[in-house]
Length: 97
Image 1: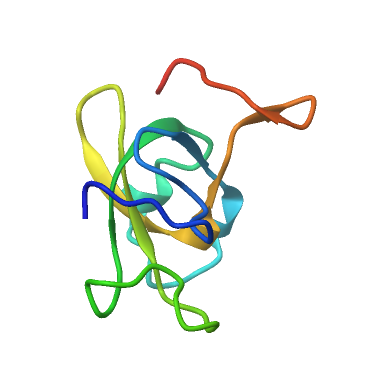
Image 2: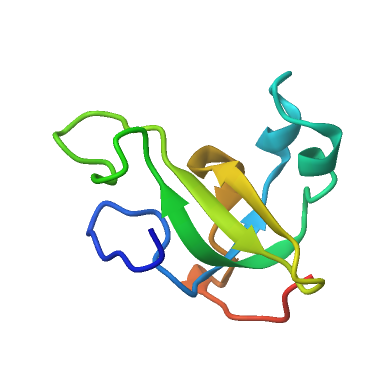
């Protein structure tokens, strides 16, 4: 999905996200995906197992957010591998890596 708006979403379209160190803790992540650790990108799409609901029905959904980086490369990450960039506890836009 390229256009979504749900109060339970960790990210909304266009927000920036930073790939956190959790991306390195799972054996299923490729070396390329792990190479984005610590980089900031823009969230451009989301996908879910059923292709319809994002974190619905009061249960955990496996949500993948697709992040575009400065070189126009796009990579999908589990929501737990991404953090909102914050400064002094508030969301902070910045330059994507």
